[in-house]
Image 1 (cartoon, rainbow, N blue to C red):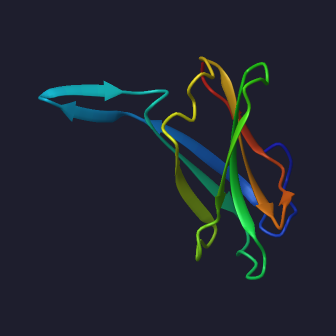
Image 2 (cartoon, rainbow, N blue to C red):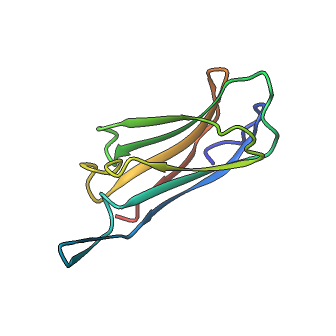
Image 3 (spheres, one colour):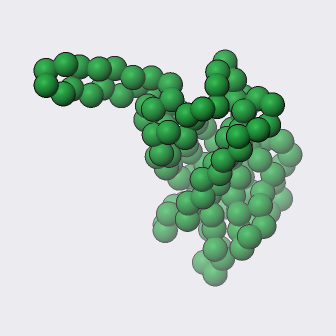
Length: 122
């Protein structure tokens, strides 16, 4: 976390996972990892969602130099107590290179939380 989140949900952390995928076509099996593989992200927060608020989960990516920024916004799943996991598009990391930064935030009624940020291992 870049700073503690004193907002209504209190983002406490998150994870990003890029797993291997296996595709078999015409008897040929292909294994993929990195860009183009299954990418999931999990947000964790400390309070229950306010019933009257609009809650958006945001995952952002940028190259190490800050260029190529892209954002993916998702409505928080109904009934998600204090965590949610979402699959991102397969090409989320495409074109970012070997070193990139990702940030997860939560927006409550348009107000964005401090980010949970990490850098790829390169």
